[in-house]
Each structure stands twice: as structure tokens, then as C-alpha cells.
Image (cartoon, rainbow, N blue to C red; front, top):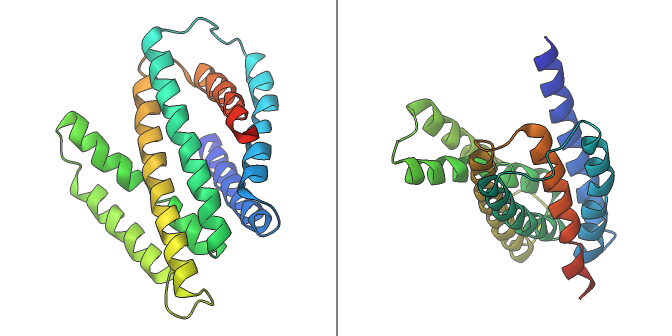
Length: 194
């Protein structure tokens, strides 16, 4: 019951955040949105550090987290560009198709094919994306094409990020992962000033 409640809160939070991010992209530049999104990681790092973070993590953990953070940064940039050029609903669904990319990448890394249920789920995701990008939306073809491109690239980077986090989890725990992901997010504020 507790797990179901937590999953509901997470989904509600992601949906609400995506809605407000989509609205914000119509009012601000991608650079400003990235700055505030990453800056908000500071309270997260502080809050999680209260739970006892290992400040000298395993080297493998640190390497996987670093590569995952780089992939997540590029995913956010692409996601913000997709929201800037397209409608909110299709872009969010398209970017949320990252498990498809993770599934493909993990099957390449482990040389194990995913079960048939995973492939069926992937086709359901793709069908939903196709239906949300239907012809009756008010977007121009150029804008729609850019939003689809940036959404797919964001999903691919998030897929890579998820695989790196999956590998990092073999060497760490969720509290350490949340703290270090927040710290890496803060480091990515630097390039936004140039």
C-alpha cells in the first residue's frame, strides 16, 4: 500500500512538473529554464545529505554516476528544446519513452533479449506517441518535426542515463545516488553561463 502511494505521488509529481515546464518554455529561454531546473537540485542535495551520505563512494559508482549525469544533462537540454518547439502532451510522452532506449541498450550490453512483454510495452509506447502527434494538432510541420527530433534525442539520452544509474546502483545505494546526482546537476550550471 505504501509503495502504491509513493508511485502515485511520483507520477503526480512528474506530470505536474512536465506541465509547468511546458508552460515555462513558452515564456523563457532554454538556458534560463536549465539554470533554474539545475539550481533547484541544491535543496535536494542538502536534504538527502541529512540521511547520511557516503562522501567517498566506490570509484566505479562515481564513474557510472558521472557518465549518467552527463547523459541526463544532455537529455534535459534536448527536452527543453522539444518543449520549446512543440505541444506539451506529445513531447512529454515522447520523452517518457526512454525505457525503450534503455531496454535496447541493456539487451546489447548483457546480450540477453528482453521478454515479449517488454517488446509489447515498447510498441504500446510508440503507438501512443504516434497518436499524440496526429495531424489535427495546431503545430506547423516544421515545429512538429523539431519537437519530435528533440523529444527522441532526449529519450535516447535518458535511456543512456538510466543504464548508467542501473550500473551505479550495483556499487551504491539510493541515498548516495540522489546526493551525487544533485551535486553533478549543480556542476552543470557552469556551462550555462558561457
